[in-house]
Length: 337
Image 1 (cartoon, rainbow, N blue to C red):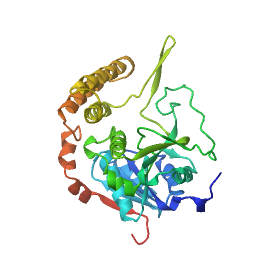
Image 2: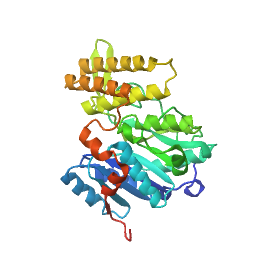
Image 3: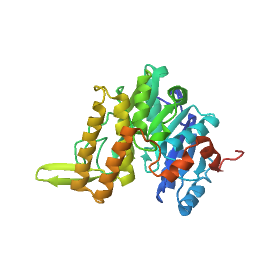
Image 4: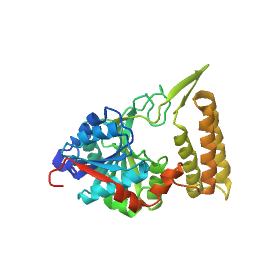
């Protein structure tokens, strides 16, 4: 049965969207408009973009529903998310929708997510609702480009959601009551595996992680390319050397903290994963030497527990969360803010 707006436990106006930006493209204002049309407010947290990009963001923040927080530099995805959530809570919101800067939401995304919350039987133990997505490069949630995607159910179906181990950050709807019990996103991870670590921590505390079966946003992970050898098709994400570093390091840390193997086996398992990643980079990607070096540095830092930003200069200023928050400047189109 298709719920009317008054039958849903939360309305779009009850939700504050948090969008983290870092060198956004010219299409961002249009994507923000699609979000602000559904949400009660949009908080944009910029991580040290260039002056021209910040001018574009300031113009977008002339919308009364959009607020802009300008970090002095790239403080990392996790820190930026936490800043946005803190602002949403200060504005009085109890639900937050997390979005990446390149995500395009469906016109009824929040209505769909609210219907999922309404159908969920144990809301007190709900950590988050993730959003299934269509990939602009035709890779659907980890399937290689060109692979057949599962048909999404009709929105009126009772089978709206599924239990999952983890979801990506973008498109995640968070109840703040559960979020404050679970704890903030892990800032020492900086970017990659921030979402998976949060989901693992939530599930360890007895919360459930669910995701919409329906695809309700357009999103891309990396800049994937497909490579065909005979009848075998392989895809690779083409992440930058810095991203390769964080992926290898943070995956190693998660294997250490949440793996079920015998003592010390996580080191060999993570090393094997890193070698397979290096093989894929060597076969299919550019700037091979820098990326392979980044992977191995990341693996070794993960083994040693060397966390935080890869760039030591960023680490010097991001070490103190309090000083970073104090340096964040505020731009708002809201009247009376």
